[in-house]
Length: 164
Image 1 (cartoon, rainbow, N blue to C red):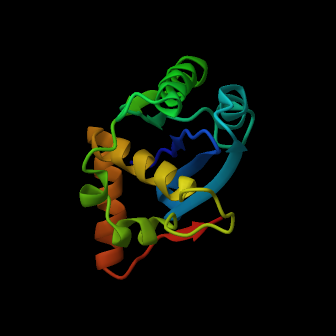
Image 2: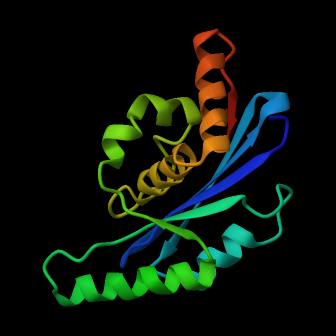
């Protein structure tokens, strides 16, 4: 578990697309958090930020919030197209957000330093991006274990440091 784990969550939107990077450094018991708000569903900007040069290397996984049309109005179809393009360009894994708020609770997001952000968005896009990233981690056996270690350390009084 000594390896660095780098995950990105993306919440595509027609107004703002939220992107949150979480880098877990177990040896230092540190979580590095970075974020970006992109105007509109600009998949190339998201890809360049998520996969671009940085000291943490390429993300282990990029999780993108999927979208299910509800009323078949024009914005629904725009979102379907935007998410499809995002998945293709960013090469991320799509996850439906159904039930995500019941699984990824505020307490966990606070612990990981991704409940509040200094940047304001249209619909809490950064919080949604972080939540979908954590949700993806919970569904992955090794990354789930990493999150369990972070929580266990916290319960033992050894809370990991969050750097933004």
